[in-house]
Length: 472
Image (cartoon, rainbow, N blue to C red; front, side, top):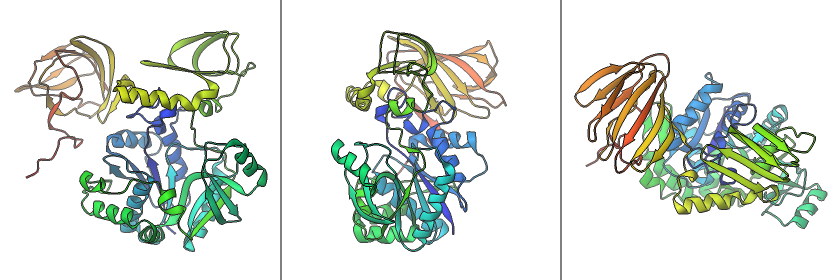
């Protein structure tokens, strides 16, 4: 049996703002042990017996960041990618993954669908549950994992089960109904994890949601493979795939669904209180990540990555500090943080999308300060990496090397710039910054001009495929 874990890495994680942003979503959040949720999902997948490769379905913008996260923790297991131009729901992601696995490994190969942003504390028990699910999948079942509930939770859907037989799926219940479900012992939380053979799920999608599987198949036929590592989905045809969840489109309709009840220490890490619960509380019930000084504070969660947080005379709060945004919320209202995210997105405020430190394929940049007509960045270029050959219409740039040696293209000239040296790039000059050396390159960039937006970039050449391909 060939098992292909398929990690679904999408969604914004709006309830975990201000750490989760559109281009730094929930799976990339680092926990107290230094690993991200995405890295934990990858390591969990790699630990399963019989793994024939790990497939990830994610947004095109997150590809390089995702690949770097994997390489940081495991360089031995081969990873392949399906890159979406935009989200179309989990049904589209599963359809594309199943079609791709059938092409690569055959119809009998089994997919283990894993969300990238969940946490599982008991890996041995999870492996046992996967083994049971694999046995059922080999018999032609679509298998879902039901989590034994620990409390009357109103934020999850439920599965009513009789052994491995699914009686019905239930929407998120009111509190009293959730308490009844807990007491009955017949209901389990719907985890959003699945196991099935590629052939079975494709056949069942043709029966119950043919519009999704047919459109996904057409999209894949029009989508170029980039080596053996990745497939970039064609945007025009992907937009024709109906937007739906795999639960609504298939699992609630099929008669071949089975469930594996399990108790594996599962959490979908759906709020800051869930993140806080991972940290041991002090004698006053406070949980702290980072630097904080507290006086007469109780039952609160404080997370600060960069600055000292002081709190006096408060209780039942969530305080999350980042370099450009601060969250203060009543712990009982942690789910409502998504309302702040939605309002920031509606206003077009950058803090819904980016952090001050932004990850790029070549490294990172951090906005140190900005004002009318100027912006100052710290740019770090990884060894062997290179920015695109580009130009700007409305801004000039002054580069000062503070660590390492830069290889620079500036207009018609190409030259090296050593530590404590600088170069000036006028508007409309073609330029490129590269680091051909084995240590990181750090520069300070001072931008000046009437418009300093990141969309004032015209790329002419890029080793990461970010130059649009001319057509016609």
